[in-house]
Image (cartoon, rainbow, N blue to C red):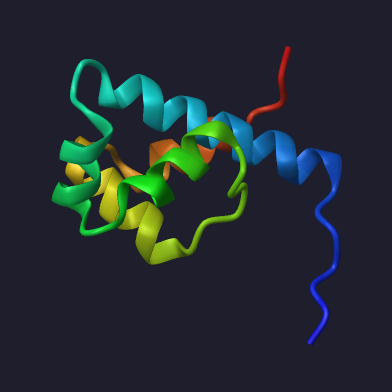
Length: 83
């Protein structure tokens, strides 16, 4: 199965998601948040830096839970157009 390339908009949305998660993490270490979410620190690093712009739903849900974020709000904020 061949995966279709992501559009520039999809990449930008992934970058916004990463920035939102990074901001919500605050002073907590990447290792601490990743462990609380049950994902690897490398996975979190890739999401935060935009290298994984379309993470799996359950990964995002686990990270949102570990950071005390609402999935609804996170989805809305990540989908907003850059001004």
